[in-house]
Length: 303
Image (cartoon, rainbow, N blue to C red; front, side, top):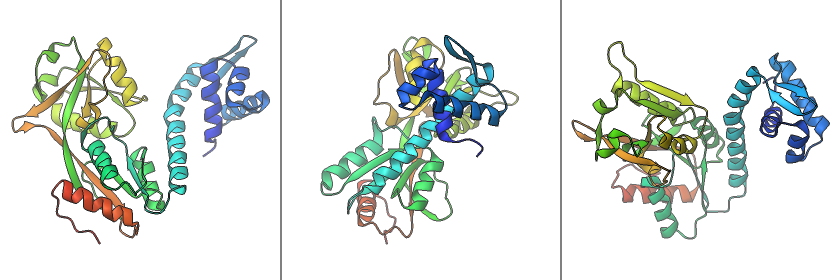
């Protein structure tokens, strides 16, 4: 890569503070170091990111696009570093669970809390990151098990279906559809959906495309480089709807309500699967898998 995360972090700080001086103070680095790094970044990408003046700095049009795209990259890097540090400090019998879903409610939260209560001697830790980072953590052994949406196999990892949760629509409390106890896909075809570009946003987008697309007509889906929490926090202003799994409904946002989606067969469900390395010898992982198998009456074997 022609630039590094540190340069992106400096550019984001300068954009947030409107000044190289204030950004350098916030990051506890020399202003000259920050300024040179941003100048080098501008040379690499071939455009000016900031307009400089005595009053401070302002972003150019290209700079706004770069900073907008850089934020999730830096956030993912920070999460990955936190994952590696937490795993490196793990004690014997510890378990690292990776996920990219909310744990404010639902089966993932209940499973982790139930495991803690049943195995107080085990050190359970969790990390939230995107799918790519989680599989990288599995590959290096820093993560014991990743719990993700869907049921797709991945080379080198064993996977098993674990549980399902209801698909929910998050919508403004004053939206006409909020008066209903449940919604059908046909109710949603003319609505605008706001989703995060981070995982599992793309998977939810694909589900909406499959369920709502008509011949010659595609659903209105807007992908944003913002967290799901940020998107849910602005829905109350009437900007659109969003889709969450049942595990995300424990968090409440101003003027936002949740309604389940139904098809002709009943509630629409989305499955979760666990992924782990076949050669992972962590005893805590085997105990966790046995706990999940018994909790959800599953039948997979555990070596």
